[in-house]
Image (cartoon, rainbow, N blue to C red; front, side, top):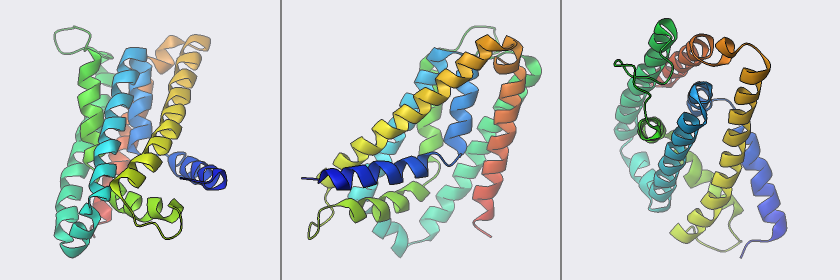
Length: 209
């Protein structure tokens, strides 16, 4: 069982970590500009991806990566390429003003954003190391890290994560109604999100140098 003080400390620490902008933040912003359905699909994909990473951390994948560091380097290369791919896609959409439509002009269903959210999260293996080092610090004294403990803390972490992404989505949608819809739906927001993702891709790749 977790003491209330431990939970409060974990929520505070998790909030500070989540508030640091990263690829997921810019991805959700881009999807929010397209609509609530696109944002919900992307957020759901990110959460599912996080659950997979938390499970890997709980199963000891972090120790495996520590033993064979080339694994995380290989995943980083693939991850940076995928983040860049999403960024370029958003930039191209901003230039063509297609929003959440495919080349045929059909609105893409949320499952497309869901798949992108999962792939985006899994393309960056660093959270595995983070979860493996961060979560045990909040487990009861004397308790060895277990998959159940990781899931319990992971559930709290994802609740905070969902609250953050929900607030971010609502803010984007609110401003899209208060200001010109063109500012937040389509070109400018997709362009900014795409550029931010390209920067994140470069930073991820630079960590290999």
